[in-house]
Amino acid sequence: MKNIILIILLTLSSVVFGQNLQGNYSGYWASTNWSYIFDGNGNFEYVTAGHFGFTNTKGKYEIKGDTVYLNAKKTGKGTLDDKRRMLIDKDSCIIDLRMRYDYCKSRNSEFLNSNKRNFKFPQTKTDNPKTISDLKTVLVSAFTNPKVVDYLHFNEMPERKLIFKSYFELNKSNFPKLKIGDKTVEFKHTDLPKFYIEFIEINQSKDYIELDFEIKDEGVSFTMVFDLTNGEWKLDYERHHEK
Image 1 (tube, rainbow, N blue to C red):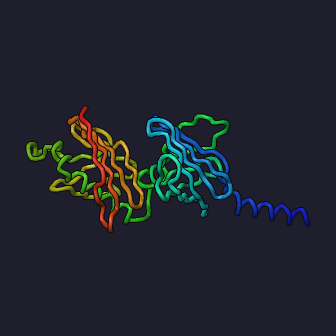
Image 2: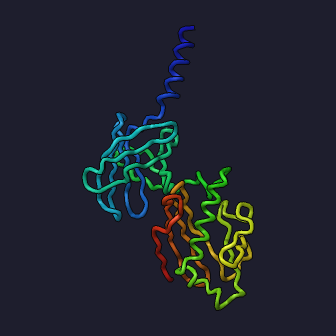
Image 3: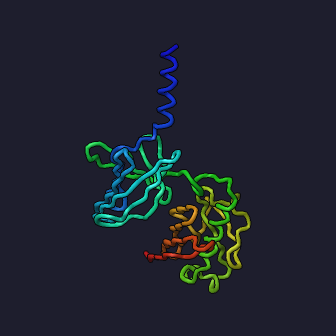
């Protein structure tokens, strides 16, 4: 009987305290190695090396449920967001809730490549209508932006249709009768014409949405970042590249 009680107590202890982040969680992307080092006592160190730069920042962390909250002091060489949230994937990886890159537990300075995880909308389904509404607002803003409009040529070619290649949950089912300007978006996955919009990446968070897309037959790709400021989605960054 005592052994059974001991096993139960150990199991409960494992459930409550099992989220132990002690160790080095690292990943490689954008020609940069990114490392999060946790000491197990609420302190962490964030280190980057490579194209992004060589930085070192220290701070405190707190675990709540399956999420670790980072609060940097902005000390050392380089800076980090004052606050950042990471999803804990068992005890092997942490995932940036904003960028979706994972950083997994490494041993002896092991070299690990980061992967982008599909765990949130639009890569996965949502039951929150506001999430869909936010992306709709940003899409309308992006495709009525003068820099994008210049490559659509709807004035010169009014017969052109605005076609989006379906991207995970960005599809006709979730965005019926999506209207941008005087065009109603058509969603297609096959039998695509020469001119259409292909989304390379959509990264959506509560207060941040990044769109990476290509305008086919025009030879141009865009990166647009929107931030939620005072309750309104505002364009924070835009870059485009002609092939």
